[in-house]
Image (cartoon, rainbow, N blue to C red):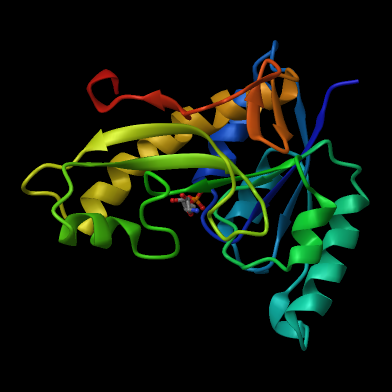
Length: 216
Ligand code: GRF
């Protein structure tokens, strides 16, 4: 049986779209069985429907606490028996209980070269710091916000005329390349999370895989 993937999103879902297209390739070793959302109006839901993928929405504004939302949301996810949960622009901080439930089977994409710039406004912060390189990271989700073991990164050059918006666009282009690659590795059984961190083909990754800017 092919690995079952549940994608969680909150917004426009361009990463979801890239994953939908990748998993449609005949030799892709996994299938997206459902897309879950915390915002009923998220365009990601529309993308999933157009692709014929089942969706579920748990509106976080209807829950009095984060713990209650997380419990309801994880019950919905579990209903689809996922082998992999992919956070693709999912904009909620998750409780430790939620994260523990999917330990070693949940990936996130973050628009910076972690450990730099966890949290929000990463493009503006990279520009303000005068960095010459920026990019995207894909990591296993642990209880540490944006702090789980990094699997892969793609770099982009920052040029003198970049703005937060132009930089976001460059980074997103790389997100759409990198996420399908990493999801494929996971589905092929090449990626695991051990006590020592992320492992590739059973060996601990001492550094993330990096797609350098000048190859982009
Ligand atoms: C991406 O930039 C991702 O890095 C961040 O949220 C954004 C989601 O974009 N976590 P989209 O919804 O996939 O278009």
